[in-house]
Length: 258
Image (cartoon, rainbow, N blue to C red):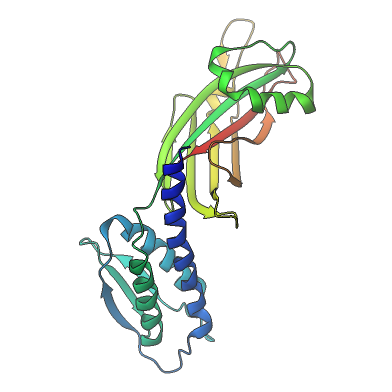
């Protein structure tokens, strides 16, 4: 990751810090007898989706003494934010948006996600060109499991803007990602993500003595994780049904890059 990329990411993280203050609205509101009003706000098009998502979560997450959310946010077709909330909340929303604009944030960054589904069986390690970039992660697996023979079942990749989600389907598996960019407290970016990976049932089957393929039950993983951009992370493992190799396992390896 270049210094320029880091600089752009950190500039955006500053915007995230301002958006986080929207959560404080919940501690400042006294709904009482205030009537709910609808107001529109102009925001920069390249930031509209992220701001709408962040403010929406903040307002929906806070509730008044009667258990009613403090407000609702939607994004209109022309790119305006439409906020339905009491006037006291609207004042807080306006202040948050003013603070964001004052920081002149850059567009929300795009994060590239890659996922490898790798089958592993006990045996001699054999270097494979399509697994070369995974060697650090595979070495970590062998340190705990012993010598393994690895086979790439499929690689998936997608790009998604921070604060949004993406789903991609390959020939043998699917990946769904919801992600956001954060700071680790040292002004260094961290990618927080909820990742769902699934190997299709037909990919987890086996051939019988008559060379007839029987689909298996498939495998599925859902994980919540944080990772540094560019690092390889083994997010999980599961058994891979195979009568010819009962000890065969499936490893899910992911990487996020800015």
